[in-house]
Image (tube, rainbow, N blue to C red):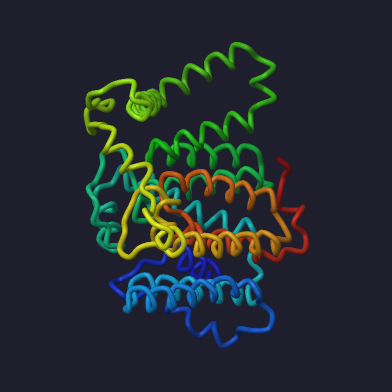
Length: 355
């Protein structure tokens, strides 16, 4: 039980102001061996770079971002120690992610539990009907974690009927998060079912129809943005459903928010908030910081001993989804990747099925 408690705290532990519940795991640092872990080097460089950048360019330090970087270093150390003290398996990680899936579904149905979890986690965004955040603070990241649960549970070796029930619950949970997550899930389902689909034209046609119906809003948005970007219309255009008005100026501001000078490209700006994950990273850290972050993920991928196909699938999805939201070094996703990287199982083939 202690193992599962620590896993839940590491991935989904809430914050109360500046107090992070993962500080409860501070005693574990007494077991850390500083000579055995080189993955911390890129994060140390990122912290040092951020300090020097802030002091030399702005003469003051962003306290919130600084604490975020130190918490990242702290969590990295915790997970390294946890992997050596506890014999956790991929199935243990999958079970913890399934708890999140359960809360995504139950919070959509039971208002009392939804309000309780939202108050506990400090959720302050507008509640959306038929949408659920689970044990996170956002709809998109909630869906991404449910998709990760799907990827992992699909590879767990259990009875087929049990696996199908679990995967069905996960699919339902993705429906209750965000449209982007739903599109990603359908792409994965098409990929995993590629052999059956290619051999049966009827199934192929039905799946194409279902996918088109589900992503019709997305198609309209993409079409609208295409018209505006390439100047095919001269007036503003209303999005599908009427919740946004696109003009050339507003669209460029949303999608192409980049630095305007060499210093900004190299080192970023201060207190800039944009939607796209790549824009956010470059505006916050510059290309120098982005390079350090990419080196971190490269080094992390090299220490993965087991389940590398799962790890690389999640990394690939993260790089794609980062076009819309910021997922690099994000709470929840980073911890899952670290837990996968530090996984130390001797009989891995007993727990997994192949892709």
